[in-house]
Length: 73
Image 1 (cartoon, rainbow, N blue to C red):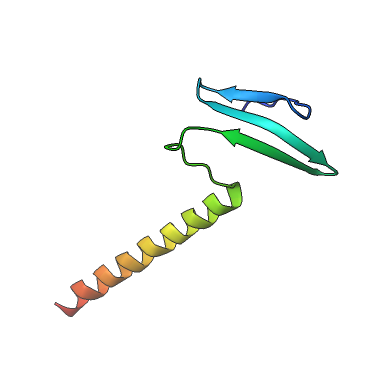
Image 2 (image 1 turned 45 degrees about the vertical axis):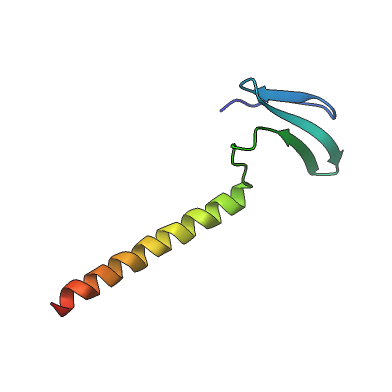
């Protein structure tokens, strides 16, 4: 993991197409602006975790349904 210090208005580039800029610092919150191609998916960490957990639960349900189908035979 790379850890960098940035001030308001400074940016970080990921590859040649994605720019992350510190747009505002207010107390313990930092607002960032991300300029990236439309084909790049950007998710907040907590949303990504929620999606992952939801997908895991869906797989468990699908496996249970498959199990029940095989039990009936």
